[in-house]
Image (tube, rainbow, N blue to C red; front, side):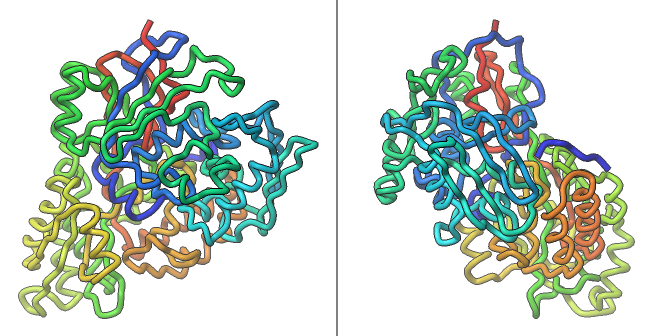
Length: 518
């Protein structure tokens, strides 16, 4: 068991958007020796457009996450796997609260003073269930917020939750601060963030669905201008091949690439690797009346799928096969739990299929598989493997919008590979995708695992070794029931012909970490 000392999938739409192209919980080295200063300009590209500039309403896709990293700030943030101050200079943690002492003379992008009470109001909006922010359960824990108090005289903000929650400090890295002007006019905020900007950048231009440019603020909020890129542009380019061509032609100086184009670019440039926390896994429709509600059939299907082979088919070998749900960059990681996951065994699969009542001497089985276009040949590999068992399997492979429509519309499916991968490192990030115990908006398979559901509230109130021991049991519960078959960790290859260095996140690069080469 590995335990990290450092401290959700944002939504089903944002999660599916990243399938097969996800980034990770931190870069693994740069392409060159870096200087102590940032370049003047960065031009990057992301797969999808910004849905809204309201960070509490956004599905937090790649473009939004990259821009929000600059135009909005948080009390604390992650840097190189650690929690560091951002708007806050220091903090005091108790089992159910965090008190932040703010930096002096904070201001918003429009010049408005950014006070403790203003930050508290923004955090209250983020925490309010009526707002519908995607990260609230992981940010504040299952019990939710008790109170949020901003003390302008003491220059502090205190966040208190109802029950102890070991992930509260880490959770506050998700709480983007919206300045008072943005809170007053949320409708305008959705398309024009100017009045709400709290970060080191302001949005200078926005061509909806095409490109966005933010520029560095040159005021007291930026203490060392040479360490921040002056102008940062995000273009919207869906095709990996097009992004790769734009890199080689000089139209972009950094971009994440997936699939076959990785090999081509790797011959010229050394990528910075970002690896997702948590895995993509084969999920089954557990609803009553569906054949995959039967555990024995789930086991049969799982044994015919090889994680290594699927990973090669889905990512051209750029992903990493896993037989556990938690990855080595999740706060709690248990490689020994792979013993509870089904490996690859065709004979075992046929035996279990017969025991479930299907096959040559049993009932005919027909399954309906879903797959994302961004998953490459991965879905077809699954269909081909099931045919080895004599299982007739239809495949609908489509865009994220099409797949979301099926999952939350007709619900006419039996199996699919679902991306549980996340930008954070907290194991709590998997909960809403596999359980209804705290709402379960992402529990597309309607999984009900009583043992897992009982362990999660315990883990939420624990920390360190104690919490990880509980998460270990929770992961075992899902694997033993074959509720999910782990398949792979997505890895994003960030290429930079200009030999920039930076910390690569799951959805974006850290704007504060970008450095020019020496």
